[in-house]
Length: 333
Image (tube, rainbow, N blue to C red; front, top):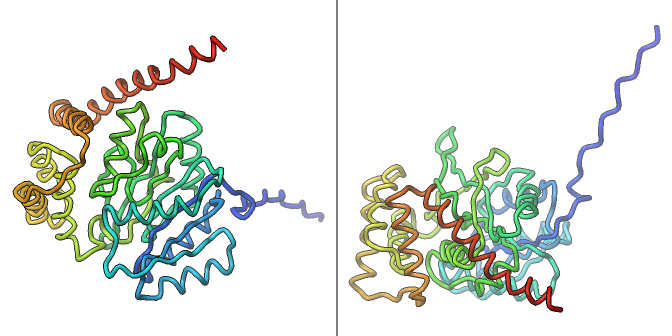
């Protein structure tokens, strides 16, 4: 009896043979507990980055040693160091480190760059899918998946709005960053970029899809001195952003769904009120603050999904007007 041969299996898609037109920039400080999982999940991507610039921001643990070990095996991983500032970089500090990464990137022609935190586990097709999303929409300036965190044996969503990209993994079109003038060095910089982009006609989004769900190994806002400090800082960030009191109150009520529920929401309100009473600086762009409050009013009166739809339609009109002079000059050439 002659046994028939089993059909040959198709060769598995090799991440080593696929390199995308994007680079990663990762600020890192005292991330020894988490960074190996992030490194491994990037190495497992179906489409790897051209370069991964990891900037150690004065770590006092084994973070630099861990990254150096990976960099010795994988040439696309680069390790750069900064002097110890004595604390974790937040808000403007994160942007400062990212800007250093952009300077290191220099004139590299990569079309896309991602600010990537190193306390994440990414699904294997994460960057492949984001590149596909960018290819489908020339107006898409920043995009991400949705963050989840572990709660016992379950995963819970961090409830990032669909109209913004998640701050811990911001996948940017570099033309978008140039157009908005770079990132703002302040709290909630990762909201300002999306709103400024929409003012200029761009789109930003985060996508709910199983292939784009990533695990945040620390709950959002807990990386420095715990979740309560993070909630208070959120309120301070709302003040810097220019949010109206009505929106901050609505946000605090919404966050009653997140633990610690009541005291966490009160901490957000306290942070906003304290910044207000102190007369803390605000993002110095009256036009932006006016636009933001109009957007927030639409969210409160029409719901976030409808507000996003209306403002995206407005952004599309802005985009068309900005592109029209190019078409006229091309026709007259």
